[in-house]
Image (cartoon, rainbow, N blue to C red):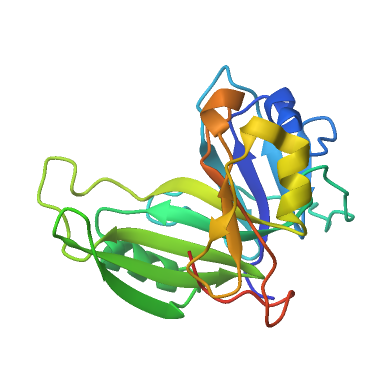
Length: 220
């Protein structure tokens, strides 16, 4: 599939992800067709870059790297039963601007939702495909008017698909919250307590898609 997500670069120590129930190979974690590269906690934290097949430039400030020798990783059995990335969350103070940047890079917007915010201001969710991974763009429905209103988009967090949340819970113990109903009917979601593990990326584990395990639909 066009522009598939090949790699995510994360500023965390491999030991932290191992403690969260991931099978870490050196400095990498394989999830579906994507490799998560862990660069350590001494430098910049969080998701610091990504590689998308066929895209060679940054997208509205999202650092994009090129992996010329990318090979689809082999399936790995993770103790937390994770087997794929459901979606990558990107935050923007001007979602329309960032959506246009995605479009210019060849990633068309597939779905658009406006929701009421807790602060009384409407929020937007815009969805794009990166192969089988969803990119969920979130931000205010009306662009913010502030000193940093023109700041670039930023990576925020990850939702991963786990084959069995009950096994994940038994494996991770207090490092995983209790599963609860997700927005998408028939699915459950549980939050990884990443701060306790010194993981700098918000992570949630979700149960598999009900209708078709291989073709996720945009959701949050």
